[in-house]
Image (tube, rainbow, N blue to C red; front, side):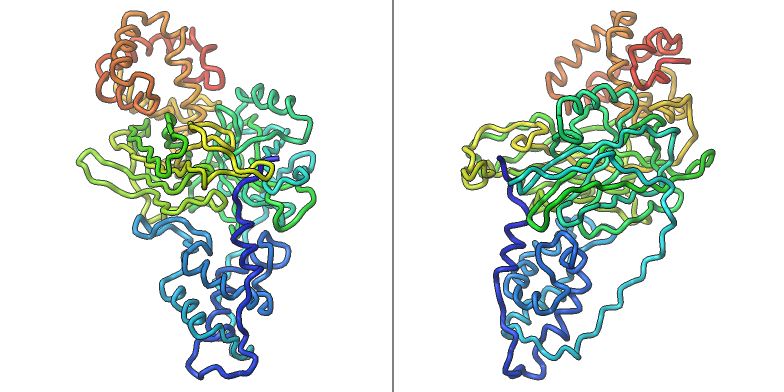
Length: 546
C-alpha cells in the first residue's frame, strides 16, 4: 500500500513536543505570555482546523493541549508552515489571506524567548472576529448515492465520488459550498462538472472499480472535465462577487475529487455539495470560466535535486477577460511554482508564487475584485515549476522509499504536473445556441471574417470543455477533408514551428503560422456554417451549426 508525505508528520510533531507553563508564576510583568498575547492569535488563526471534530489531529482551542505543543507551534509559525498559506506576498496580496503578519510571528518568537510563560487566564481577551453575514439556503444540495470508507492502512486515499443524477437544466452557479461529511478525514476536495459528451468516459471509470466512485489523483482523470471549485480545511462557504456566475451545461454530472487523510480520524464519508444559482431565466452580469495553464512536456530526471521546468504560452483568451483567482498545482516532488503574465510590451505581472510547495495545502488564491488582472490572447503566461527528484525526497511504499525514476506529466501519484488554474471573468454577453459552447456564437459575432484567432478564443468564452471539443472538431478529419490545400499548408507550418510541443501550438497559430491559419479558418467557416460536420463536434455541436 502506497503512502505519501502528508500533513500528519508536522502536525503529529506538534502534538509530541512540550513547552513550559511557568508553574512558579515567575514571569516578568512585561513578558509575552500565552493567555495575554499568543492565545488570541491561536484562536483567530489556528482553531478553525485544530478543534474538536476538525481535521487537525490535536486541539489548539484547549489551552492545556496548546501549551503542550508550544515549542513546535512556534517553530511552525516561524518557518511559516502554519497557518498553511503558500502565496508569497511579494507576488500579490490575495483576498482572504491566512498569512500571519511579521508582528504576529514576532509575538510567537518572543513568547518562546521568554520561556513559554502561560500567564494568567484572566488576561485572555477573545479576538474580535468579523461576523460573517448569514448565507441563504442552497438552491441545490447534491450528495453521492453511497458513502466511501478509505482503504485500511492507507494514510492517504484519493477517490473520485460521482453524483449520478444529471443536472436538469443549464445553471448559473453563484457560489459553491463543499460540505465534508467526516471532517476528521477529508483533507481537500476538488469539484468538476462533466458535460453529457463525457458521460461515457465517466461511466467506464465507474465500471472498472467495484468500490463507490473510482480511484483518481489530483484531478478527475477525465479529458473534458470543467473545473468548478474546491474546499480545504478552514475554508468557509462563500458566494462569488456580486453579479458573477459560472455556467454549468444542463445534463452535466458532478465529480468530487476527494483527498482523504486518516491521521486525524477514521470511518466513512459522504461529502455533499451545495450550489447557489440564479433563478431560471435570470442571467449574470459577469461570467466566470476556469482555464488551466500547464507545461505538459515535463522531463524530470531521476536523482535531480533541482529540476527546473519552464514554459511560456499564449492562450486563446477572449477580449474583455480578467483573472479573478489562481490555483497552483503540482504533485509530490514539487518544491516551488511561479506563474506570471508577460505582456506585449515586455512588462510582467505575477499571478502565483509558491516558494515552498506543499501538496497537502494546495488552495485557490483570489484577487480582490477591485484588482482583477486584465488578460487576453495578446498576452502570454510563463509558468516555472521546480522539483526535487532525489532519493531523499521519494514517497514511501510498503515501508520502503521508492527509487528515483525519470518522471513526466501524468495523473498518477508518482507522475507530476506543472499547472496553474486561472479563474477568468468577462462580461456576460448572452447565450448562443446552447449546449457546452453556449457563449461561442455571441462572442464570435464580434470577430472579423476569417479571423481564426478570435474565433478560437471564443471557444474559451464558455470554458475549457468547449475549447477541447471545439479544437477536436475544427482540426478533425471532417473539416480537414474539405479544406485539404489550406490544411496541408497549415500542418507543414505547424510541424516546423511547434513540432510536438503542445504548449507552443497556439503561439504558432497566433504568430508563426498566422496567414496559414487564417486561410484554413476562412475555408472552414462555410463548412461549419453549413452544418455538415456537426457530428465531428461531440458535445459542442453549436460550433458547427448555423
